[in-house]
Image (cartoon, rainbow, N blue to C red):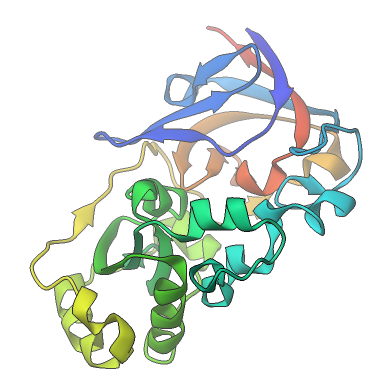
Length: 266
């Protein structure tokens, strides 16, 4: 079997275990079905997710020019506390910013390598947790816009982490935590503007990933440098493909690359 297309983050379905899908323009792959099969990935070219040109990807799947121009890559994407649509203030495109920023957002705790705080649109729960490789997560507040979520995250970052150690996450070197207790401990640090949105009576969500064998010493595949890689797929966690030789491939960090994928069928 052979497939070719531009990489975008794998789509997911919340089930036991999580189901993963690679979606190309003309192909649709259930990646779970490829576990225990030999896969070859070959770099073909670039394709900016915005303009579609064969230009080196700068960040987030966009070429450098698009990254600094389009609203989908503005600073408030990574730093939600910079959101201004609720003030009718435009950053790059007020219509787009209103559409994204002025909708319900969740501030959450997720445990992938350690307990961390994060922000996402309500519509992206539990997808955001799956993408981060979190085996457990819980909502803290549900607010009506991105700005309130952002200032809440900033306040909580002084008392809990906001980064994931990808190697620890992939090795499954993790500790289960009582996220309800974490949520209750952090309640006191929620900014006054967001206190009324605190979620007091929910339970944590547990996530099961399709992994037959975790890597001992994960090493990241640079498909642009190596051009081609072949290995046996042993699992999927977060947005990573895990192979039998401890190589891991982060699909999301390679968005905007056109690849040729071939699967050896037994």
